[in-house]
Length: 171
Image 1: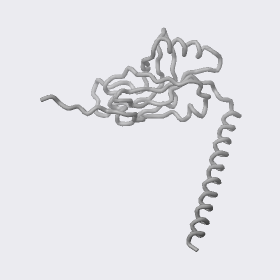
Image 2: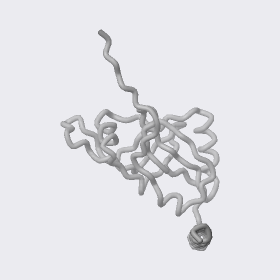
Image 3: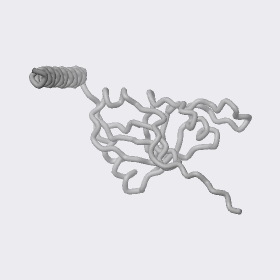
């Protein structure tokens, strides 16, 4: 009898870099695979990872993820990995060349946005980004607050409208 394997489908988020979206204007995003060891995959499946200080660098035509923290696997033995080692990213040659040329421009950098599992394979979402100035950060926060307040006001008006309509039907 053949074994029936349960295939993992969908997208399971492991880690997200919210600070990158706050500190940078995201220009384009790319999904790429990562070259990982077995203990790194097991540690990621436990949902443990951090991208806070992570960045992507292109060396010799290859993309490398630096400073992404994947903690050691607790049940790992001498085969365990180091937590902050650099990891190779799997991208098409055209994408690497495009990212390399764009990242050479002043103010542009490549940052990781998220690590997740897609159909059982570990992926990282990276972005070509441009650094925000301090006033840009304040302005985006102000815009978020304004939209939040307007949404609250609209929701409150709808609730009042529904309540008055319900009272009108009861009479």
